[in-house]
Amino acid sequence: MRFEGKVVFITGGAIGFGRAFAKAFIAEGAAVAIADIADAQAAATADELRAAGGRALAVHCNVAKETEVEGAVATVTHELGGVDILLNNAGLHLLKYNQPFAVLARDDLRALFDVNVVGIVNCTLACQPSMAARGGGAVVNISSIASHLSTSPYGVSKLAVRGLTIALATELAPDRIRVNAIAPGLMATENAMADLPHDLVDDFVNHRQLVHRLGTMDDIVATTLFLCSNEAGFITGETLRVSGGYPLAI
Image (cartoon, rainbow, N blue to C red; front, side, top):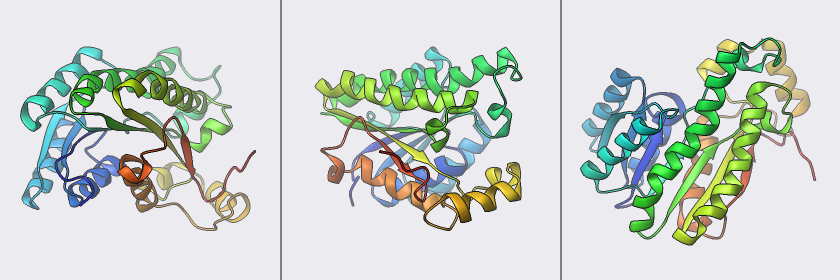
């Protein structure tokens, strides 16, 4: 198993992609920390993983609050021994944050950047000492193909994630910590399918993508496992699009 003995800290780990990441890493031998603001759902996910034989811990963590993040990482370090892999998965998204800047309330704009951008800084720096002490580690940030358009507050926040990935990869390299990002395309998640108009989904899949199907959680999970593994040991500072070929650019 590729991650035997490793500890994975997953923000937004209670449901959705976070839960899928947790199940996949446990199947590969890792212990996981389910870090989320949804305490009951995080506890339920951790209970489910432990019942299946995995090693899992639920911790309360609002990524936008530096002290909460530091406390969560301290708890995980005490209970599980440290952190080797960080998945910066927590984020605000969907149509609410795809409005024009002139429409989105400033309080919502601040919350968007506090979670999507500052949250990555908080979590990465909090995990850095443990990763360094354990000989290095891997960080994967979740960006979006919206970052290549950057015409909305959400898109700009995810463009910032790509920039942070380069900056943090440079800053953490002396500690043998690799930092990469994934930019998912249109994914067949329950929230996305409920939030997006059918005509928009159909246009993306059949006319904008080169691979004419919706993306799946498995697509993102497989890419994440690769980027965190020794097989990706020569890759850092990169954002990998997993979007069925949209948008392609030189």
